[in-house]
Image (cartoon, rainbow, N blue to C red; front, side, top):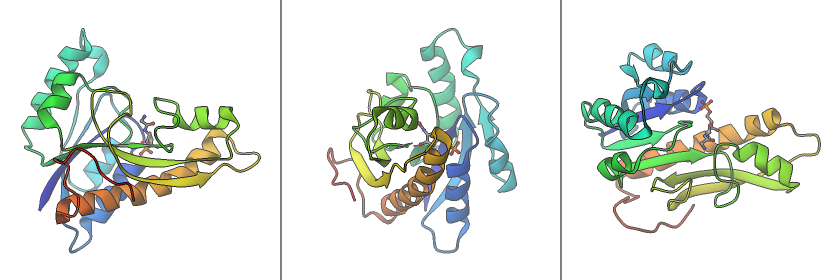
Length: 199
Ligand code: GAR
């Protein structure tokens, strides 16, 4: 059984989908802890599933590095086999990436390397592109620059707003994330090799 820790910042709807998938009989991974960089609304999903939750408020620390040290201490206590960033809107300090790599993955609401960063949906819409997408990547020290593990296109419809487009992207993200976690847990996807074909 693969033990997964999930980090969030917001509503945690993708986290909830992963919790539901992992609760199904036969799923080869389980969520063992959920953490956040703030008092995130999505921490309530962990409580619903009886899973421990913790918060390491970014603003309570003097530096990103100090925050990262405490975050790593909290994560380490659960000895996760995989760390999933599911809407964590903070860049992890290099020391945290180093400690948990290669087993850290991140979901992103765009077809990377297009539209990286904190406003992937807004930036895609503003670009005038006719399509964007969803990606699951391995985390490295860059901003959404790690190897792509899975991705899929999503059409941008006339009249789309950031909200309507994001609402169509999220179900795709959820499906990709659950599939990536399943493949890692089943041994079909090896994060210790450097490059991975997207599918
Ligand atoms: C998701 O779309 C996730 O990809 C995005 O935040 C959303 C979280 O939604 N993450 C990023 O943009 C990271 N750059 P949720 O809290 O409802 O799961």
